[in-house]
Image (cartoon, rainbow, N blue to C red; front, side, top):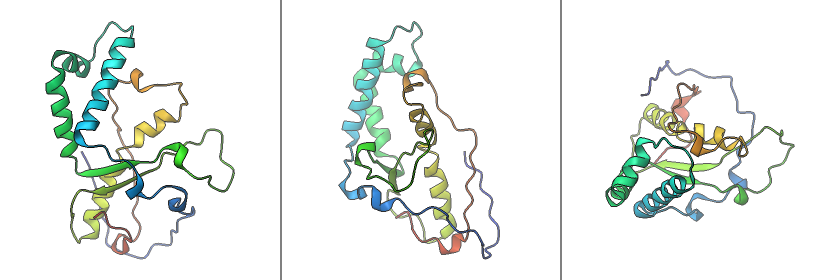
Length: 179
């Protein structure tokens, strides 16, 4: 669920303080994009591997569903992936060129490109809503990866972000559209 509030457009004194990392990551066109079937098989194999290597007694509903009917499960994952409204392309940490400046030991960044599948609208506020929707996608996975192995995706049965805030300043001049 998304709750959004809008304010009449007015000039904003806020400027971005950090330079864009766009020159430190590969272009989105160069990144591998899995097909829906490839995505589904990868997720299914991870679940099967998790089940076979896990000593946990309790089986989560998604694992039980995958175990009960693997072929149907893979098909549903493939269909879900194909119908996603946003195309996400993840940048491997190995592909990030070194960024100038010292990083903190606790700092972790995950780079990804994303865009809408198809046209959204010419309305800048609609683009802001789509950007807010897409921003939630990697929020929790980035924090899990920041734990450097202390927490694993296997330890988490459901990931939900309860709240995050994005302020869009001067939306009427939104430079990059999600098309």
